[in-house]
Length: 424
Image (tube, rainbow, N blue to C red):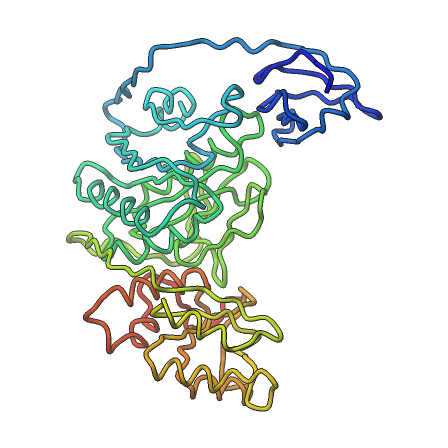
């Protein structure tokens, strides 16, 4: 293997067989594949044997500083918000030596990277309950976030709360907070970025300042705020129980499903475009009862209903993503699901149905196979999103006192997760 003379963090130019590639070496400069960050912001691995020649454009100089947390200087006269930082790209910066990104947990660093936020509002409290990527989260993380938010909304000086979060499973956390924070008295706004703030193409700043604008409103709901389109124009504020990540990398990755956004949000104004809940007064109730003994199962053609035998061993409830208006193989099908559904529901497994199609709603009474399934005892969840349904089922089954009311509670519209009719 040829010696090419570069190290992690160096800005380099590689000559390949048909092109030249510029980037920053992230990690493994001595391995068979060299990982570099391109100017576009994307990472690419280049087989070392494909590099015909290399040139170091800029050496990485590591500056060692004493690790010291700095304080945020509060500005009097500005509206007051609370901030919960949990990780994700919005709370990260490029660290070439480390081989990727590192967390922004120092309040002073947050102020340096997001000056517009701190010019706009007085961030009274910054809480960092943990730092992790969203795919590493569990219900324990959701509960910690809810507990942090509850303390902040109970503070009479704080007008609203922002939660920064990774994107991949953000809609699960949004759904969880929608159920954990009952009788919410102030705005709770989750936001994200697809690209870190130290990149020219970052979407982080607009998302964060628009989240602050939404957090200063009179919307007493859990919302998710993010880019409304591919441009840095404005954001959408979307209900936490009716939103889903619909693209792996676009700025406008999150979209409201079967409903309109609550509002269009700019850094300096908010324009409401649908109805929303206002504060009822009183105090927010923290209700984090939850069981992890729930699962989300996607039905596919030919799937054997005996899969339910496996789930019944360890789980209390299952949400099945069904086809069409609410379809699983009926009695005349080779893989008839009806007997298995009846058996497991009779033995105590709660089985719910959510739409695999994402858009639209279930109606089990249009076709005979739908009627068979509802007669078997499956709870049909209308237009509730599958991910929201799974989170809600864990929340409902986590309440011991609701044992005889599971269907009633799942069909109850707790946080706008259900529409009475299809939005057009």
